[in-house]
Length: 323
Image (cartoon, rainbow, N blue to C red; front, side, top):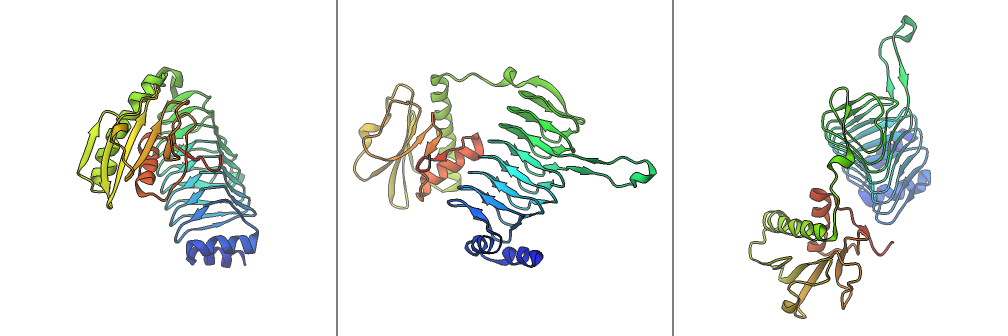
């Protein structure tokens, strides 16, 4: 029955997958939780939080629990299997083509990530232990704000402390303390995180947001959406998309809004706000950089900017309506 249900979920359309899981195994699926085409998930208990996502062509089949907290994501072409439990923290991410063995528990903390083609094993053996060969069976834990870049291989029993980075292609066979940057085979700590992490003043954040907006103009608007006619000023861009006129403005820490004199009733404003005291006159689409929230919208430009900020700059906004 279990194998049949796993296959049925695999071939079903996304809206039906959630219904099947709720009906047959009592899955708990949050607001806007989504399972993509040709993906399937199975476990003793399946819990997916608000806005959690399993992308297309991914298989998750565990004898233990599958727990995805709010805003967590398992990308496409991933394989997760084993007899224990996997838990993904809020805002966590597993990159495409990753393989995770869960014969012992795998726990990934909040705002942590495994890059593309990462591999995690909790069980290691092949030659017979009765002939003296070794075997290791132990869980893997990643703390909060841990980033393992593409191609990282994590051995059984490894713990990586919070606020750490493991460089691409590294083989992690020993635990890594919190606040570390590690790389190599075997992976070793090369710097403390505090050595490379910049301290950001409000003014530095203002300048960074201006760079993000300039980058979004080139990549998100020109290349991806094909918008070539852009009116640009410092901290502001105005354009027309699908017969609608938009204005994206950075509200800096001083609260001075660029381009406000250009606003007319037909313009759709989007604000990226770095001033805690600033409030829009009307409830426009606002990205609050201090609280990292925005009202999730079906608007194409708002969504494009939100996903661009996440994909290229690691800015993970939550839905302000749920906070």
